[in-house]
Length: 319
Image (cartoon, rainbow, N blue to C red; front, side, top):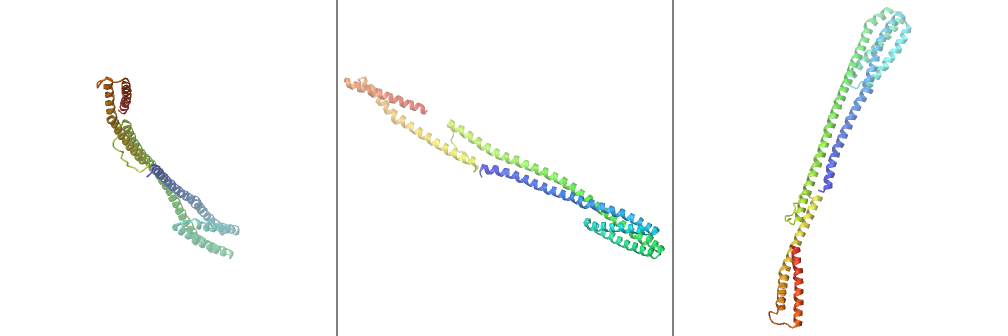
């Protein structure tokens, strides 16, 4: 794998982890927003309407008593308040989201409808002049039904309030879980980033250190064994190239040694013999020489000295 690919994969892993953290955070935030929206748009309005119905029932009972004692003005007002309570009970159907709330609301609505019917009977009895019978219905059955409505409304308020507390507890749990998840994921991302960076940096520095030592050995002329190639990235390719270069240098050194050995054996020895022979001839050891012969021997001796001196300089440079 290429070095660039390794760095890219390490960075991609960190980015994926961070993206996962972001997605989890967004989902948790969305859930928190949903819970808070439910509290704001469902639970709080339901409690407000339920409280209004409860207060309205108390007012209806008082208006009913005043109607029975004082007559029509309070009867019309009772009808107006009763219609408003009925509308509020219908509205509560939108907010009763749990089976318990629905059952309590259904009980309260049924009791209210029976209470309305009883008040209607009271109005009819009052219209016929049977006020005593109307008072009897109001004190017994009507009070019972009104009490059932109030009890149903109280139970509905308790169920709605319990749902609100549960939603708040869930929001608190989501918040705590979100913070924990984000911190753990961020820690994991940082740990992976440090680990990946450390691994890549360690492999790079180890390979570069090996190349540096081998280069110093080549410069000192003591490099013999090739570098072990452990990776297939750019550093591995560099090690291959270095081994090829070192092998070429070794071959050149061997060729040079062979060349200078050949010069030392095949060139310096004959030149030494030629020079000594020229010196012997110049000293007239074999016999006297003519002037021209002496001149030629001198040229041969001088030239052989120059060649031998040049060969010795070459051999000294090679050493």
